[in-house]
Amino acid sequence: MNNYTAMDIANYIVWYVNNVLRQRNLTPLKLQKLLYYVQVNYLIHNQGQPLFPDSIQKWQYGPVVPNVYFEFKDNGISHISEPKSTFSYQMNPEGGFSFEFKKFDASKINNDPVVQNSIITVIDHLIDRDAFQLVNKTHMESIWLKDQSRILMGEKGIEYTNQELYNYFLVNNDFLRT
Image 1: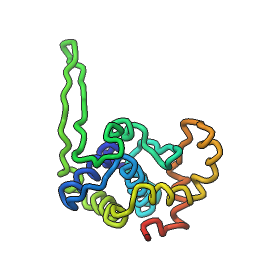
Image 2: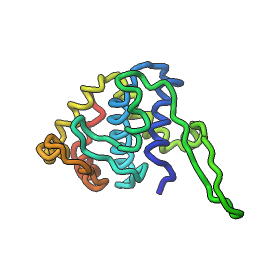
Image 3: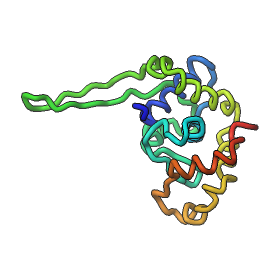
């Protein structure tokens, strides 16, 4: 099992788009779809093992990792220019607690070629797509369509399972094609 969270992967996507590709077209909506397809790509190439344990939910505009959504939603429809710092706290043995903000460090993923390549493959193939092209792409997938009426009626918490993603994309593995 990997030691990555969805936030780690989202931050890497933001870092890569800004520092390697030097593009300015990564909105929160687009980030969610890239994160989804990164998880799918990893599942397919690693016998159904997920890259991150966070759940992916089925929302009106397609797949969303809620905690990542809430971190980046303030960008609205604007480009995300930098990764988010993470917050951690620790209980001290002598009582009380301490906390710190950690800036994102891309080196952990850059030093993990399997994970890095899985992420970069998806970004390089999909970064030039408009966010709503990616939304439409996810809406054509039967694993979203089967819950469409519930989603559009406002039902919350409908999740994709890793097994569902793996089974669907093992057969429909052209998700990186334009």
